[in-house]
Image (cartoon, rainbow, N blue to C red; front, top):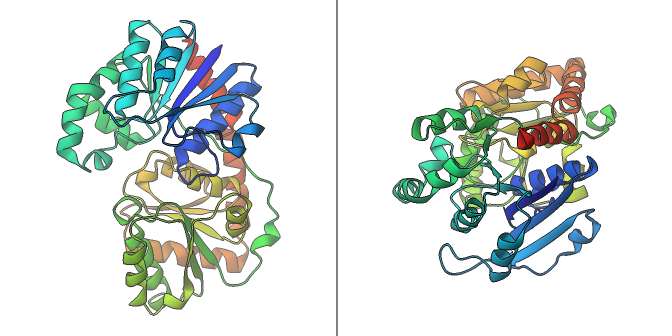
Length: 371
């Protein structure tokens, strides 16, 4: 099968955006299974990047257009010339260029899967609500209707989309992750280290709750740990200001955006990974942590709670409050002190290997394409 992934960007796995990582890894897995895979990226900088040279499949880049709904002339020609048996997989919603591309695919009777990556979550759609509601009614509904598959990774997103768009083509299935072999002695320090990696955005990631929870853990529960936050975003100054009021401020470390091996080195020091998000698709950072045998403390909107609970590899923030964060951190500290945290680590690694391998996800995706 020839499969073309259409994405904003170039699917660079070293970018903080989880969609890039998902498309890169899914494409690799499908290629290994013997399929002809390509990535077509729409980007402001279409020139080739160094990381593309190591890919076993082709990546084409097309320039972003200033005109709404406009697409690069080369992209238009390739869409109009591609073999009708080709299967397209489009990543993301509310993208005018994707609307234009799907009109061409529909006209040519070419099937496509649309992976939303959390786009249709209720809270995500409440950002610029009037604009999104109008766009959804005029354009996005048509894309959803014409899609062969609408792939969703979040239960809350599926529930919300069912309320605003009725169609039988929705499919709920997880993303994948590559597990890493990790030496359990890497977190041998007595004092626990808690980590976060992602966009520094309060409304989205709930980082104000995370900081407040850490303060409670330190001052009210006598916690001994430290907190490390990796990433960049619009609310860095606000969070730095918030932390300045806390007694725990000397134990809160903002390390900025890190990628590749530098990021992995930070992860290897974490005893637990936190994600207090208010809405998500399925955050790759949490899956990366689990794949590195790191127990997690997560909110229900991460859409991983049922996996983490069933496999006993972390703690769930049922109401996503600072008090819950503090108590979960204290539980991790006790587990670390007793040595019982090792079973959580083993459970995390095993879950990723068995339920989230990219080969498993790619096989299920290919079965769905062909159905």
